[in-house]
Length: 222
Ligand code: DC
Image (tube, rainbow, N blue to C red; front, side):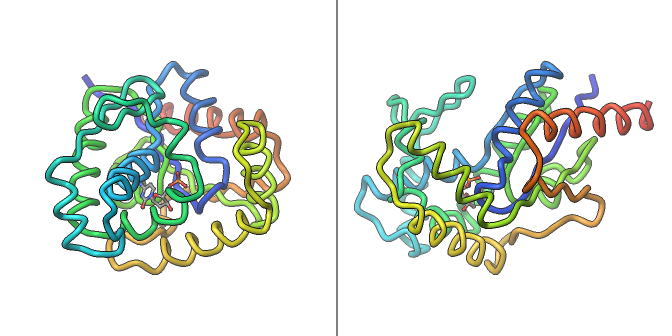
């Protein structure tokens, strides 16, 4: 049976996961936040006091990396780390941990297997280009640094995580730089991805837009 897939790529904190979750609910698709997988691996490395920028440490860490995805929850060695992986120490190291080829190959394989069995909405950096090059719909979602930092700041404060606005701006700019200049699958807009600037859009507008675009694309492919 053929499955549908929606790929949403874009820079850090551009609202991909909120949009992805919303779209998956409307269409009754399964949502996969691929960033959470790289974050989980980063936490695993940090727990082992490893250097996230070191290839040999990353390869060593892959050997006993035990991650489980259940619905929107993510588990590391059986512990629910869904909230923990959003904290600043993970955010500021994830771009280093995820740049290694061996790490990316492992994650991409899991993601591709997942899409074989489900109608999916997947968000990340390389979904349109590497993970699902044949996705039914490809979106490249962007927003200004100010809009992204403000959203992320409010989201973290609402969760009770203490953080400064300036640190979030620095983290976003730093991750944009590393994610788009790394050697392995850098963040780039796939030629066939639709550019969606959400700086001035509400989340409902974004969800409705993606759902409409998907229906159009799916109709074209019937
Ligand atoms: O979407 P996010 O901010 O939670 O992602 C965390 C980091 O993971 C991000 O800085 C880059 C990396 N990432 C990636 O390289 N490829 C993906 N498909 C998803 C995320």
